[in-house]
Amino acid sequence: MDAPRSPTPPLLAARVAWGAMVAGVLGLLVAAVAARPSFVRPAARPLEDDFLLFMHLTAGGLTLVALVAVRLFAPILPVHRDVAPGKVALTRSIASGAICEAPAVFALVDYLVTGERLALAIFAVALAGLLATFPTAARWARLGG
Image (cartoon, rainbow, N blue to C red; front, side):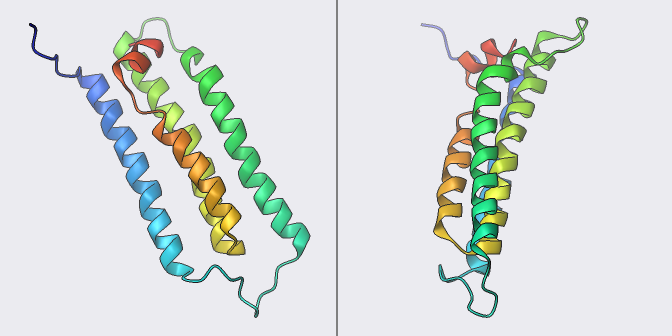
């Protein structure tokens, strides 16, 4: 029985980058929840319903577009033909994580501005998309590694 192989340096770098993205988003979540201890919108700053709708639709739309983009376009991101396969997969992996990280951060901004729980639900979907970009061996192979 063969011992499990240790990850290649580019795969290890991709996993470290992914971990940093997830840690950053979770750190922002903690800060956002701490900054807004109540789920009630502050009465001193009532927001217009149109603005709330705009924020939520933007956060949800960004999340949906990111999930589709990562699934469809990350494996085919163009790269120079002389680049090593590990570096190609590393670039595509980091791009995939960043594409999902941005909507998660925007959903937290939505929550900080509006104080509504719907923004946290949108954040949860975006975070799930980010977590799904973890560079497993199978995903790494699909990305060109």
